[in-house]
Length: 284
Length: 294
Image (cartoon, rainbow over all chains, first blue to last red; front, side):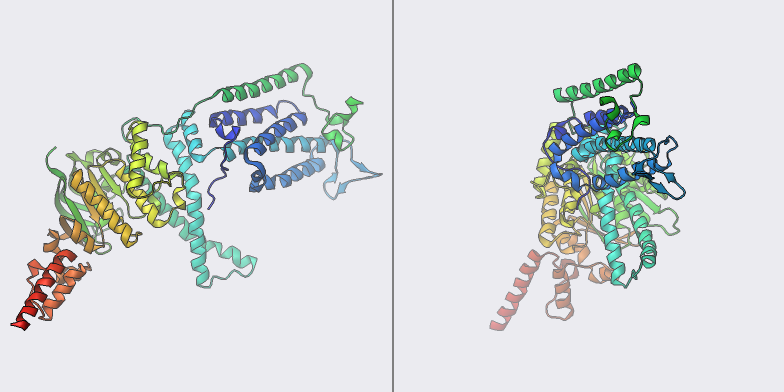
C-alpha cells in the first residue's frame, strides 16, 4: 500500500538537501506575489515542472492533487471573472456579453485577476509538491529537526504519516466485517449512515494504538537523558548553494522591478484571451 | 552490581478507574542470568507484570501502585521508563503498534539512536540484529508492508539492538509460525546463555517454555500461584488446568497414563520436555517388554 506521496528516484531534486527544497518552496511562494504580473508565476511553474518532469517523469500526473489542479484553476478563474469587483470591461462574444443570473457579466479585469491568482496557486502548489514528491519522509523528518524544530515534534510528524496506512487498513477491515454482517449501503443515505458505525471503532482503535505507541517509544528510550544520535547525514552540496542563490537572486530581481517599474500589471488593457498572458497592446 | 536483576516487593497495582487490583501483593526476585517464563490465563496480569519491570507501571499507565520495584538497582518510582530502557528491553505483544518508524532499518536504529550510540556502531547493530531475526535484505522496506510475523521479528530485533541486560518479552511469538517461534526461543536462549541476559518471557507455548526456561511463574488473578523450575510447576496438572493454563503435551500424556494405571509416574518426576519424555517412555516400554519375555 502506498503510504506517502514520495516517488523514488535519483534525480537532482532527489539528491538536493530537503532544506534547499524548503527554501525553494518559500522563495516560490514569495516571488509570485511580488508583482501583479502573470508571467512571473508562469516562469516559476515552467521551471518547477521541468525539474519535476526530469525527476519523476510521467508519474507526476498520477498524483491525485496534480489531477485536481485544472479544476482549481478553472474554478478560481471563472469565479473571479464574474464576481471580482475590479471588473469593468465586459467580455463580448460577437455582440453579446457572457452573463449569468445574479452574477452579472464576466469582465476582462476580473478574468485577468483570476488567471493571476490561479497561476500563483499553481506555482505555490508545484513548489510544495516538489518537496514532498522527491523527499523521503525520513529525510523530511530529519530536515525538520535540523532547521531547529525539536526532534519530538519532527518525529510526531513522521509518526502521523505512519498512522495513515494503518488507519486505512483498519477502516477496510471494519467495513468488511460490517458488510459480512449485512451492513446496508444501497443508496447515498444509507452509505452516509454506514459511516457512523465505522467511525466509532476506528476512533477507539486508533486511540488505543496511540497509547501503546507512546509506551513503546518510552520503552525504546525515547527521551532518555542523553544526546540523541542523528542517523541521517543531511548537508548542503555545491548544487544546493547554487540553486538557493539563484532563487534569492530571482527574488531580488523581482523586488528591484517592483521598486523601479511598479507592479507591472496590464489588468486594464486586456481585451483578448492571449492578452491575459502577454501584454499584447505593448508589443504592438 | 549484585546478582539480583529485578525485585518486586509487595507490589499491588490498580489500573486507573478500576476497583479491583490487577496485581496483588506480588513478591518476586529474579536473579541475573535467569530465564523466567510467565504463564497464566488472559487477564491474569501477565502484561501488567511486564509493564512493572520497566517503569511503565506506574509512570505511563497511571493508576495506583503500592510496594516497591527495584530494577538493576534502581527504584522505578524515582526513575523514568526512558532511563530504565537503557538496561531493560521490552517487546510488546501487539506487533503493529510497536513500529515507530517508516523504514525497517530506522526501526532497529531508533532505540540505539535514542541511547546516543555512535552512528557507525548503530549501523553495525542494525545489520547484526536484522540478520539475527533473518530480516536482512529488507532494510529499506516499509515497516507496515511486512507480514505480521516479520513485524514481530522486527520488534524483537529493535529491542535486541539496544543490548538490554534484562529482556522482557510479552507474547513475542503470537504471530509466528512454529519455526519462527522456535527461532525466537533459540535467539533468546543464546543471549541468555552467552551474554547472561536476564530473560522474562510471557508465553502460551508451554512446551517450549518447559524446554528452555529455568523457572516458571504462574499467574492467576494478579497473584503468583506457582513459582519454580518447569518440572516442578508443569507437573501440577490439576492446579494448572483449574486456572486455565495449558501444560506441555508430554506432561499431559504421562499424567493420563498414570491416571489410567498404565504406568506409575510420580507427580514430581513427570517429564515436561519431549527429550525426557521419550527416555522415560523408552524405560517404561523396555520394562513392559522385559516383563512379557520373562
